[in-house]
Length: 391
Ligand code: C5P
Image (tube, rainbow, N blue to C red; front, side, top):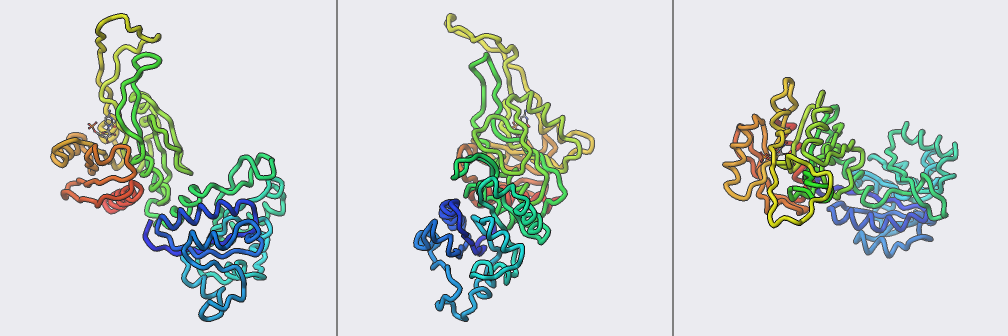
């Protein structure tokens, strides 16, 4: 995310207001400047003191706050904001937005704004399903307002259904996505990620060490930049990014089939998965007993997914990853040429594995482009920007 974006976070009256506290913490942690504005009803659910402590700024809850320099908070606060996010947005506040009402600071701010408005509804399932609310949501969308969620699940009232506010982490990624330049609009991007598991018998397998974090971050970043993303994932404990079509493919062979079966019309293919190079020739149906003093496994070479995609007629723009333990740039460049790739990402295995950060060098025909050590999502964005510049 570009640094120093400024948000007005509007909190309205609903039990999901407690999640807004976590949202503020995450936004601030991600270098987003947050100005909290609360409705009177919101103050019944969570105190301005809590939100002030988390955002590091005084909270505005009333229309007539004398501390705002020009005495026009509705203009002053919206002037500096890159976006206004309402989370939670109650059914009543949504109805107010539809009609352009301005009877408190937050609704006035929304009406006076000159920036995008994102609304995260939070209400009981019946209230959400009510035709009046559905009409209101459709009207907000028609007015160019972005609706975030809602989620489905257990509600504070004990019912189960649609209407819950999205979790703070999901809201953060949707807000960050909103700010990304849509450089990949209309493009189809396929990413492989995670490790493959090559079964020896029903309970044992050969695998590589890979968390999937880098590949998942690339899938998320591509989606945020407007691409239609297919993530072909091997073993990984991660939750697939919102809005990304995810195909699970645990073995090298299954991953090969999943990729080849969906590769037509892809514009960009990024192979991040740690695919096993060898797989047991014979898969034992039953668990192997440890009766023998030694055991020999015969392994057969797996197919190189990336090299095969790169040599397809009408191949997409192909990007590889090279995780090495020594001679990084030399080995990575040799791999780029052997697999006939326009671009390869070189990283030291010890730098990347399992970590939330990575330090990589991009290698293309013009040479090496080192990127500073950064969170994987930042690396993913820079990589995609580099790909766009090459396209
Ligand atoms: O040849 P090596 O395995 O080191 O190359 C790594 C790159 O090739 C990664 O991008 C990885 O996803 C891809 N790869 C593949 N299929 C394989 C082996 C590696 O797509 N069987």
